[in-house]
Image (cartoon, rainbow, N blue to C red; front, side, top):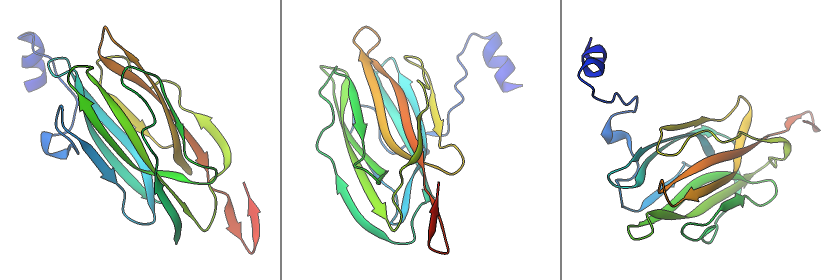
Length: 180
């Protein structure tokens, strides 16, 4: 009933989670890392034309029994430039960090990549762009896949980015035999 009333009165209905779910606020730094042994399995974002920025939220999935290595990247992009980042071979994306510049109305990004007892390396695929400019974004890792990379480009007219995610399967280890 509330949705119908909002539509009749001309209000936009946004299918986003409550404000307290977001990792960052508009125009503020974002710093997120999954708990040990996990990697990012879901990304949700909402854009504001008023702020020309995005709110971000992440969920994680269990990925490893033992983490053997984690490292933050340097900045993977400049403002208004394309972003292409894939974690080093065999690692997964376990955290994201960014800051926003109001003059450029864009973010620069860093990524946390971790490796466990088994390298993530088979059957990799790109999601395809999952959002339009100025729109809600939601990416969920396909079953048995793990996030390993991101790609996005910025549009100065819309002051927003379109996002594409890269994920790979973790080979199963059974009785000493690795199968994809």
